[in-house]
Structures are given as C-alpha cells and as structure tokens.
Image (tube, rainbow, N blue to C red; front, side, top):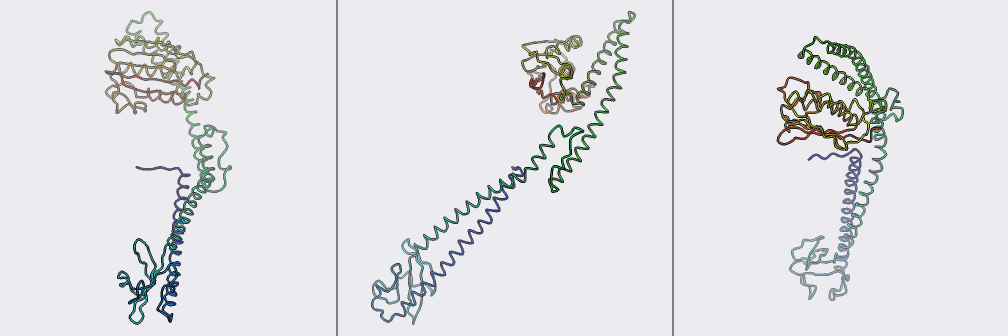
Length: 427
C-alpha cells in the first residue's frame, strides 16, 4: 500500500527521523563512553587495591584488609580466603564474574605461582548505569518531541506562502482578465518562481478562455440567422393549405429540430460565458413550469412511438432556476429516454429537491455507467442517431450550477436519472 503524505507532514517526519538518528547516536555514544570509562576506573581501582593487599607484610589476618564491598581469595588461603573452584580458571587481568545471581568485577594476579583474586560487588555500578540509561532515554524522547514541534513550526512557516499561492490560484477571480499577477507578492525564491510559472500559465488560460468565448459568441450569432430562417420558413409552410399530412409532419419535425438546435446553441453560449455568476440576468422558471413546457413538446413524439408518458407533479417547490439550463437538462434526459425506449413508459416525477426521469428502455450496462456522462459515449453503439453529447451536456450543466445527477438501473430493465437541484444558488 502506498502512503501519501503532505509536504508539511514530510518536513515533520524528516525532522523527527533526523533527531532520532542524531539523538540516538549521541545517546549510544554517551552510554558507551561512560561504561568504558567506569570500567577503566574500576579496573584501575581494583588493581591498586589488589597490589596494596599483596604488598602487606602481615598476611595472617585478612578479615580487615579488603574493603567492605570486596572479597579476597588466593591459592592455599585459610578459611574464607581459600580460592573457590569457579574462580580458579580466570586468567590474570580484569573480569566480570556472576555468582549466585550477583555480579562482581574481578582482578586476578599470579605471583610466584600463587593466584590472587579480588572481587568487588558491582551493584552500585549497575545502579549508576540504570540511572544513566533512564536519563539518556528521557533526553532522547524529549529531543524527539522537540524535533516534532520544531518541524511542525517550520513546516507551517515554510508552507505558508505555498498554501497562500494555492488559494490564490484556485480562486475563480484569478482567471478574470483584470486579475493582478501573483509573482510581485512573493520573494525571489522557489515559491516566487512557482508564482511566475502560475502567472504564465494563467495568462495562457485567460487567452484561451477569451478566444473560446469570442468563438462561441461568433458561432452562436452566425447560427441564429439560419435557424431563424428555418423557423420562419417552417411556419410559412405549415400555413400552406396545399401541404398534405405527410409533408406537414416532416415540416413539423424540421421546426422541432430547429427549435432544439436554437436551445442547444443558447445553452452552450451560456455555459461558455459562465452565466452562473450572473444568474439574475437569465430568465427564471420553476421546475413545474419547465416540465409543463417540455411535456407539451415531447408528448406527441413519445405517444407516436407507442410509449406511455407518465407525469407525477408531486409537491415541487416554486423556486426559480435558470430556465435555459434547466430546460436543457430535463429535455436531454427526456430525449435520451425516448431514444433508448422501444416499449413501455417514460415517467417524469417532480420532487421537493429536483426531478426524476425513468424509462423502461434497454438500460445501461454497469461497466458503462460511469462513462455515460463522457462526451461521444452512447448507451447502444448500434443506434445510428445521436453523437452521445446529451448526457455530457447534462453533467456539465449540473456541475456549472451546483446540481447533481445520478444514474441507477431499474428492474427488470430501464434507467433512472435523478437530478438534485441546489436551492442555495438560486434566487
């Protein structure tokens, strides 16, 4: 499993690891040095005590000769001074001896073939070592805690300009043409270079957005004229009494397609111009009003296909939404249901927070559900009509307006599209 930490966390971890390494090495060095020095001192002291005992002239009474915490033995010694068997194998020099769960420091000398052994209880030495270990451990823990705290403080100071820059870049106003540059607010360091790079990138984005808006405006303006000609021509043809029933149906189909094209152009134009930021300038309609208009438009083609159109108004709110965008979302979902339903029904249900479009069509395989909202993806590749842009447009509008659209499967077949409208973004 791959663990991902933020840059601030990495700084703290680096400080902690560096402190653990340095403090650990320092602590081990202190313990080793103190242990070595004490052993040297004890060895020298024991050696001096043993030499003092060996130089004494009177060797008849040994009870008062050694120190209270020392034991003295020698080969052929009387009584308690007799050399025990477990000490007879020791070579001359300094040793550490364990006897009856007690530990001793031992100094061994051989003089004229006789082995002399002086033992000293090392309980005090071990107690000093335990105290030393405790002090070193506490110091290690405190240094580690101090390193984490200093790492946290340093991480905040180091990351403060980076976090500030990220917030400025994420702010939507930074894409506006009059947005001030970022680089002058930062020092000429790595963060400053990053700000310069962001300024250059944001500048290219502004130019691209400007070109896109100009292109969209020009295209929409150019398309409106031929669409108006088509619409007016269809009206004139429908008024002609000579036109037979079949021709009238074809003209009505052309008129309906022209109207859909006009609405689609208007929808793309509003999205390109980021109409969400000035929603008060666009016409407002409730969900019920948009549904009534779309039912009037789609009832005839749905029923001509032999499908049953079910409308459940429920208790929808009278809140006003962007009429063009809401009309595009609901209309594309109804069109999608009509396109992929051969028999059964299409149901439009209004709810307190939005609406639901259900159908008894072919459904969408589970492996394709996530991709259905991508451009140029269709539910059934065998169908020749449509480019697969309808659901992509629905998703884009919902993201722009703060709405949400979810797709679920109905049993035994069919789809359910549920749209939740964000009432906090409307008037």
